[in-house]
Image 1 (cartoon, rainbow, N blue to C red):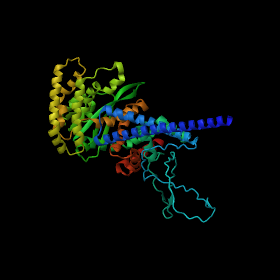
Image 2: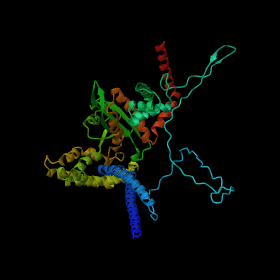
Image 3: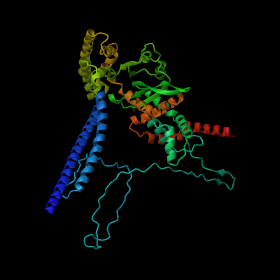
Length: 531
């Protein structure tokens, strides 16, 4: 009787273990499927953005949410997969769940390969014979990273004495970017890119170097940054000339706190982007930055003193003097950003945001919702002609966009006549109608884009960097940031690794005659001070 009960108990426990294993497999299967679906949705959305360019604010937020959701689903799927394997191991008949993962891309060919060969058996594991013949091999690739390595390069300059005239000859000393410098071009490029490209302040870089056994104080790093900025100024001047020679520019600005006399003031970083790719231009895309302690109108007037083309920007009043026909260099042609105008309607018609607000949500404006729909119809046409010649873009706009634009203007004026001044949707309608000629200018010029997104993207790094470095240490510090951002962002726009490019430039810039004379003068100045 006891044996029968024990056998029954063992059988029940075995069934329970198998049931738990099956349940674990089911959970792992569900988690894996959810993660795979989320991954595919994210890839589809990314491909849409690559094909059609930037989309609505709602879609951009949705993409960020999808990435965060995928991160959580992937982690959960891996946990459930391991739990299923452990549950299956406790059973004799259970089979572990095999997760379906997206196909992984092969590792890049440019990465060095380190070959590790596992020792072959000396004899056959079956019969013990030593007569083994190689049939082939299987290679498993594992991605690994080598921690940052430091080294000291010793440049030896041998001295020779002439036995006839007793003249001593010696090769010249190696070039350093800074007088009596000690840092190589790759180290300098890393410092610059970490500070201005990755938004890592010098104190954090100094702390990291100290953990790796290298003593580089903040003062030492700052000295290198100042010297490199001075050396690279000629490149900034060349980019400036290239940008201001464009037919059309994107302009925008963002705030940057600047430390001044124990407090911070609201400074500004201005950007002017030359990007002719939307209308088939072959000029390399470039981004130019300036810094200022305020947002007074004389700053854009000084920046664009010699420019007389098309300026795509927002409706900031500081640009208005540039549009004056009596301007010395000629009036700049304004073209306003439809994304700015659309955003004001979108905020009144954002169904997803209202759902999150709950009871505090304002009523969705049907007028704003219809305005967004009509503006999106214009954007749909633009996606189809992006990258084509200015002439082709103009032809399509005259045929397809012009009728929609005329209908939109008539509809906006009709809706405005029915709204009171206190209506929430009246402000964005007035914003457009008061400047309608500047909004509608794209209909008559194929070079003009509907949005100013190129400039907004160029300023995104400063918006993100403010959270890391909090404020610029001084007005000159903001100017240095503008110079380095010009070089780094221009490299990014041309699909060039900014750090590798800076290392190459700093290593070869002494080959230019002007720079050689400047370096010699700096060396002589240091020698005079030492004497």
